[in-house]
Image (cartoon, rainbow, N blue to C red; front, top):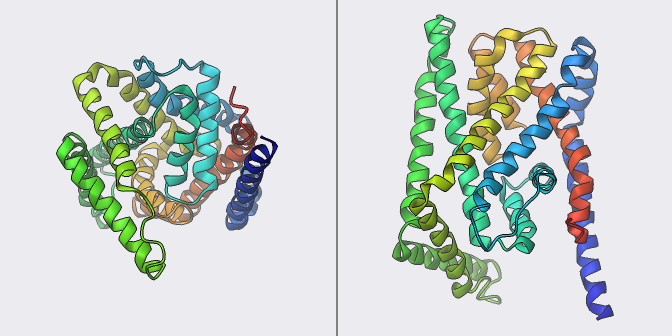
Length: 347
């Protein structure tokens, strides 16, 4: 018994050490932006910037409610208090920032975190994909609204008209991806074929990388059970569409809060007119964020705002300052709850 406890302690210690190293790397990668933000923060209205604290906490809570407002309908799942929802959301946000894996680290952590409550890996994966779908669709919808407003006001330069077809193509791509996921996950036969394809691909790649020494990385039966679990969650959701109303509402609120974060920084700099530009830049920039977590998001968002006519200094200051402040707030608010979760103190 003692040796088993030591083993778990060792695994958790290594995990914590790796997390600290990754967080340090993230801070190092953003150090120039942090210094630049500290220099420009004197230009901002401090009272307006302070609104970011309650706004960020409410955004985390809204993110958690996308999952937990749906889970409340599951009889086998334990109930969550509002405090637990906020705590788990801050942990998840911390992990998504600390581990540069395009959201994969967040999915793994959410699965681990919700297991004690009776949530299966397939259910957690379904909810994670559902959250991505809701927030992405809302992001692009609000970008189209913002484009419509700017077109009506004739505020889009002629050379920036390429943003309209790009936004439309992005929307089409997202809807096609979501349709494909639902199409595959809705059929037991299709999900079984997909799980076999995944297991063969992963195990085949492992055999090549290890020169045939390790022939099986994941067992086909386990991966099949996992995807069948996702299939069951999709079928239940389709049969009980009323369960999705509250998650959809919270997804809308969460997406508006994401834009609101940038807009609060813009307001602190006295630039109230930037809202539609932020809505478009945030939607297009988030595509880069899903692929490469650091660097390209800021480049994409600021680049779109500049193309739309926002002056270069303002676009870069608003984008970088927001990202730096939210990064530091994420570390400050999520590191200790994450530490407690890893230690097993989840309550």
